[in-house]
Amino acid sequence: MDYKNVREWYIGALHRQFGHRAAELRFMQRHRILGGSNQILTVVVGTSAFGAIMSKFTHQWLIYIPLGFSLLAIALPAITRFLNYLPLAESHASARRKYGKITSEFQSVMAGCSPRQCMQFISDKSSWYADIMESAPPIPLDLWEEAGKEAENVGGDISGNMFHEVACLVEMSDDFLYSDSTIAPMPDQRRWRYSVTNARIRFYQKQLDISFDVEVVNPSTQEKEQYRCQGSGPMHNADGYITYTFCSPANEARWAGIMLLRIPSHGDIYGLWMTTNVNEDDKIPLGKISFHRQVKHD
Image 1 (tube, helix red, strand yellow):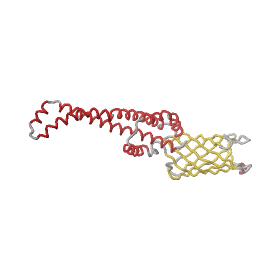
Image 2 (tube, helix red, strand yellow):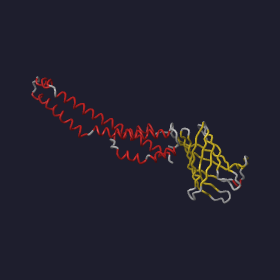
Image 3 (tube, helix red, strand yellow):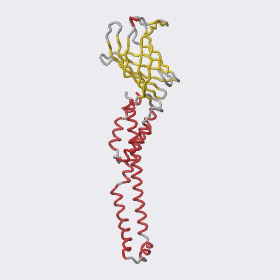
C-alpha cells in the first residue's frame, strides 16, 4: 500500500475528467458558433430584402458582398463537417462522464474505507481505467495544463477529508507478561529489543493505518531479525484500535497482535501493544509503544 500512489491516481483521474470537460465545452462552443453563423448567413442571403438593399449602393464593388455571403454560406457546412467539432465534443463528453463516474465511485470508497481498501479499488478498476484512456480523444495541450492545475487544487491536499500521513519516530519495548488474568513485569532476560525505521502513520477520517520496518534482537540468541509491521483499525474520539501483523521477508515468519493507542490532535501518540506470538509458557508479551510525530509526509 502506498499513500503516494493513491494520491497520484486520484489527481490523475481528476486531471483527465477536468481536461475532457474543458475540451467538451470548447468544441461544443465552436460547433455552435459555426452552426449559428451558417444559419444566419443562410437566412440573410436567402432574403430578397438583402439584394434590394445592396442594389441601392452606388459603389460598384459592393455588389460583390451578396456573392461573398452566398459563398460563405455554402462553405460553412463543409468547414463544419471537416473540423468535426460536434463529434469531438461528444467524444470528450463521453470520456468526461466515464472519468466522473470512476472519481465519484472512488470518493464514495474514501468516505468509509481505509487507504488499503482504496488501493484495492484502484487495482479492481485498472483495466476499465486503461480502456477509458485508450478510447478517449486527446486533450489539447493548453487545456491539459489548466486541468492539471485545477486537479491539484481540488485533490492535491487530500489530508483534510481523505488522507493525512505523518512520518514518525517510534519507540516500542517489552514491558509486561500477561497470564491468568495477571500482569507481571517482563524479566530482563526475556525482553526483546526493537529498532524501528521508516515509520508512517496515516489518518483517514475514522480510520488509522500504521507501517514501519523493525529490527528485533532475540534475547536468547542475540540474533537480529528483520520484520515489516503493517496494521489498521478504527478511531473513536482520541482512541485507536489497531490490528497489526509482523512479517519477515527472509523466512516468511509472521505473527499478529493488537495496539491500543491514545491519539491526541497534536504531539505524541502512545499506547500499549500485545502479540499472539506467545512464549513457551503461554504468557503473552505486552509492551509500550509511542509514535513521535515528525513533519507531514506528502
